Amino acid sequence: MSFLRKFAAAALFLAAPALAQTAAIRIEQPWARATPAGATAGAVYMTIDNLADAEDRLTGVSSDAAARTEIHEMKMADGIMKMRAVADGLAVPAHGAAALKPGGYHVMLIGLKKPLTAGEKVVLTLDFAKAGKVEVSAQVMALTSTGSKMDHMKMH
Ligand SMILES: [Cu+2]
Image 1 (cartoon, rainbow, N blue to C red):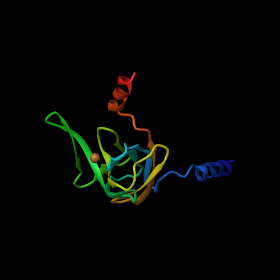
Image 2 (image 1 turned 120 degrees about the vertical axis):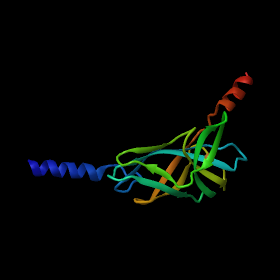
Image 3 (image 1 turned 120 degrees about the horizontal axis):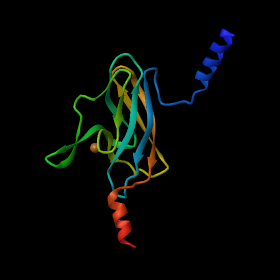
Image 4 (image 1 turned 90 degrees about the horizontal axis):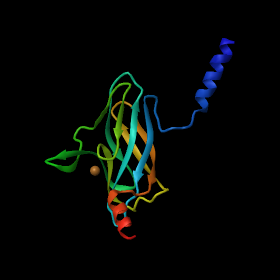
């Protein structure tokens, strides 16, 4: 009975969907915002879970989708939203998570080779100090900014 239970648990584990993960790092819901025509930069968001007993650090990101890829932070400074590249990476606490989301941390794609189009995917390689390289496929979602909604309302 005990053997069967163990076997069932192992089978369940093997049947788990192939998420982007190493033993220690799990990426949840990676997504990017579709870019308007002519835009040369785009942002990618996700939640990084660290299942390990030690802190890890996202030290770099690369992608074939853009000329350059940076880890950015958005912050209010003197009443203005400003973004800048984080100097020494993004810490992911042990048994914790780091959230990349609009208005905060994000992966910045600079010099897009083509616009990010809703329904497509953008592939990134995340580089962690301890876990190493983790490939992520981010879903591109429709562009919904307050600005475009207002423009749309004005048309009616
Ligand atoms: Cu940015």
